[in-house]
Length: 544
Image (tube, rainbow, N blue to C red):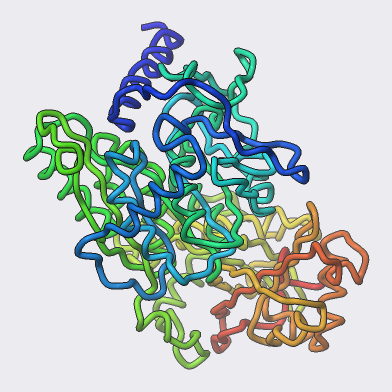
């Protein structure tokens, strides 16, 4: 089949599936425009597309509808401690609203300053995750501003604000209250309802929050998770928008949905498929985040349209699921140097793997191959640096701040690059192999460090413990914790880091400066392991 024909066929199939996600008849309310007037401070506004279709069009009616759904909850589940994410459905409120309300009731009396919204694309086909560039989303309840994190998140693949896509307008587009763009100028968010229907619930349960809207096309969920992870903190909530199975008889749907819900709560991403949930990629992304962060999942409510609307011949499933930090993890202390992640024989394995990779790169011999006996913990994605020193002097160092691949593969690749492609040094020669010493540093996931002033930042930095990532506009650089041994003064440390990023020494004091911190477990040949590492490190680590 011609690929273009096949592509359009997929769009038609996706459009038919949308009816299931909506699962309601066309609105009998007359067409019109949203009555809420845009706030002057917002120049680019994504107006409501499904007000009057998926939920009430007018402000007073919408407030009443959402508040009633929140108030009429029966058998309300216990409040989930340490809440970090929700999965909620996105059909019309008369169908999935009662289930969504149970999820959003968990937000009462909590504060989140940022909500990352993840939902599927129903009307656009593209190979990326789309991040909006508007200033605000609008509903009949008012404006919801975008977080500055949205622009930052969209800077690297697979997230983008300008994907090449083809949009098929939904059957109800002429009934939409939004200002209609010219044909050919539709974007993945123009008609998308999966994120929009979440906003009125957020507006009635949270205060003073901003959003990061992400609409999924065909994309690798793990890569999206890697992009999201650095932006997570205690003030950030993830909301995944998805319905479950579509158009099966009532009992069959319950069986299918129970299997999917179990997979989600067991954090088994590979068992959540497109047949199970229209937002399966967003769900898989959340599961990947949860596994890396140590979160757990809990079902809050499950029903289908047969329960809420009565017709049980062809139903759509809906679930509300909470993700949270378990009490033992929430109260657990940070790793200390006397409680390392790796046992002595495991450290030795990674060092030998790095040594073999360096030798292979220098001599042109075959690189180490994947070993079926590699321990499961080495198959987990973790970031690392490999450092080479010669008689105490830096000879090469390459690494990554964020996880990109399983740890053992990362060690192989970073060791080869440190030996041959560190731009500060010529490639290591074969005659140097006997005197080169190898060090491996394994990083924790970087976390954003909140601070109110440059003085507050300095007070929160922990010399010898924290690796630091400084970001200012498009400039970024990092020092591993080992560098504190050379630069123990905090202000000098930050000045040097700013200069490494290509900025002036005091640029870290700018209001737009962002800082993340992480820790490392470092170990080297012929040396004792340290929680913070050795003496010097290269790209991202060394001040040299």
